[in-house]
Length: 134
Image (tube, rainbow, N blue to C red):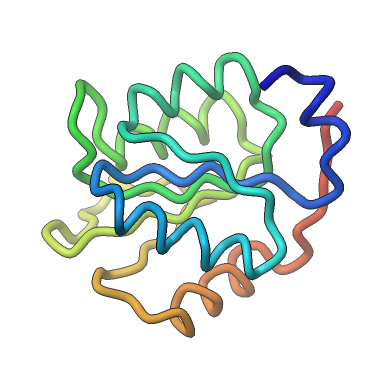
């Protein structure tokens, strides 16, 4: 998808990263129901490559263990450094964040999570869902 097609999307845009297809699909559905246009990626590496081309989205939701060279914590830190306007939610059922794992624009959700917990994290961390594509 090119930038022109993204510019026509009325909803804020979220990138969902998880290497488990069913979990990624369920998470994408929940975030879509919250009012986002959702793009999906299998790995943090794939997500980072996508962001290098299309960095104007508003939300990154990533699992910690996604395969590839980057994990979700590293992706969150790289996104905070390069694109501080993108809000980040990191999720894991296997690893809890340690000091320094999460940047200031990120929050953490423990897996498995319910729809209510995810929606609460979205509302707390991304209350306005404003768009800035400049």
